Length: 224
Image (cartoon, rainbow, N blue to C red; front, side, top):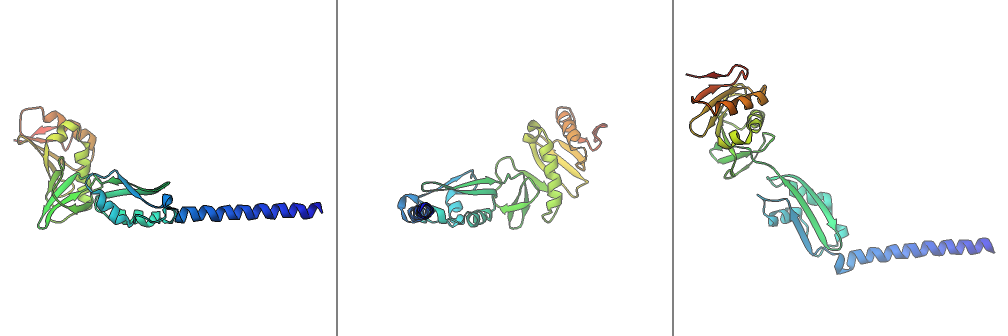
């Protein structure tokens, strides 16, 4: 008798748990409070929030628990400015999309427009360069490996020198030449010892003379 009673208690408890789970699922799926009523986009600057929302495929009124977070993130990741994206549920009724955008470091003029290049050397979009973007000349075609070397040189410069940098000529990765405001030219050669070359560049920008060679940073020379 005691055993039978114990089984009834156990089965009753399991039944109650199942019922509660069913009720909870029904609430999450059908109660308006738990349906998407807001899509919150953060981290975007160059990409419009409406564009992010559209790319995510998330529709208002969909139950929050039914959102395919991976699918939404993959859609947003296709946008050219988006480097990273995370999509989350924020109960009771918000879908949260956090994006990290690419930094446009360089741009190259082409027949179809200005190709923006990110911090990895990858050309990723054609549009007007934002402030602080440095022009790269030399290669006739986009070359991510060469662009990556140019990015190394540009980002090695201290903020003061970089703020005056107007263009980098890069016929090859061994022949980088930096052009600064005021007509200063600094020949780097390759990006080997970039840190030392950046320090030498900051020094020669303060000296008389327009054309300098810092390809051997321990033996900086003025070019006649």
